[in-house]
Amino acid sequence: MQLKTQSLTLSDPLALDSGDALENVQIAFATYGALAADKSNAVLLCHALTGDQFAASAHPVTGKAGWWERMVGPGLPIDTNRYHVICANVIGSCMGSTGPAAQGPDGAPYAMRFPVITIRDMVRGLVGLLDHLGIEQLHAVVGGSMGGMQALSLAANWPDRAARVLAIATTARHSAQNIAFHEVGRQAIMADPNWAQGAYYASGKTPDAGLAVARMAAHITYLSEEGLTEKFGRRLQDRTSKSFGFDADFQVESYLRYQGSGFTRRFDANSYLYITRAMDYFDLAEEHSGDGEETLLANAFKGTPARFCLVSFDSDWLYPTAESRHIVHALNAAGAPVSFVELSAPYGHDSFLLNVPELDRVVTGFLE
Image (tube, rainbow, N blue to C red; front, side, top):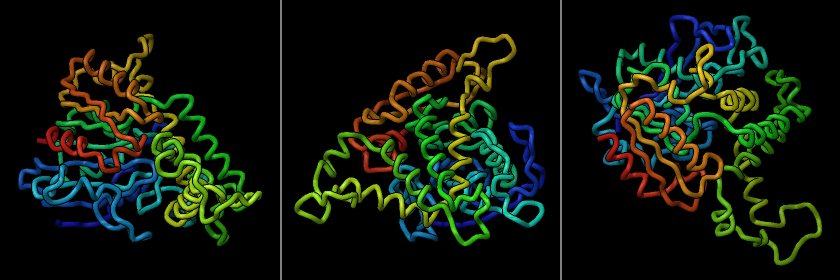
């Protein structure tokens, strides 16, 4: 598989929904597979909250496999023998694209001077990347979770840029419950003394304790009760009886602590604040309701020429099937061609990242 990792600086300032603008925006990205001479085989992958451009290659910090290695590669559903796959780190993140850890105009890290961004701002950065690469229309844009939000945002705001839109385990807006879980994570980070109002980059101390708790809380939402019960139940961790203390007595406690501590080695706490805020602000219907118009999601997709496919999972309680059905109904109302499937899997929201063969068949068929 032909892999390239690159970074580019957008030539123009990136205008943001907040009214601010970012100068000299860096976009870090990876490509897999060869681009056709007519550039007709490009597939844009949009990553989730804690993802990055390393969808199908080892992560340079952790050494772990890419987050979608089971889906992207030669002969796989997103077949790099056929498609030129592009995956970019979103702005606001911390794997090479401009975010709070990047240098501001004065040479110091932006930290909390970084402007608050939206999902649409992230997609503006991706469109800038496509312009740089000379790709006028994608064969498809594909994303799960926050990546699905980006795919829908591209379709709504730049409707001619993708012929196909595949949105998996996602939503058109964050619910109060979604916002509540994110706020718990943000408060955990900001309560860590090492956060230092976000200005921790030069101190040598990072708010790892707060970030780990944020990750632990979020990770619970990515799983299902069935999956947690099957994997851990109430089994004890490396002991035969309860300690009557506050160590990790249960396997599930140990697992969450492991997830939290591992996350701090590869992710920036301020990026977590900014990206979760962007997700909470996401509301496609609100974005596309004009003065005096009823707030209807169908307004976002009026006149779209793209074909759509929505996928949900029956065990996903973070973005349940009802959220995908709402999007499908809006697309039907807008006259857009759309297919929809709810897949059965025991893994919860993370099912799109795990071994669900039915998803492989859906992805393969839709891209063809």
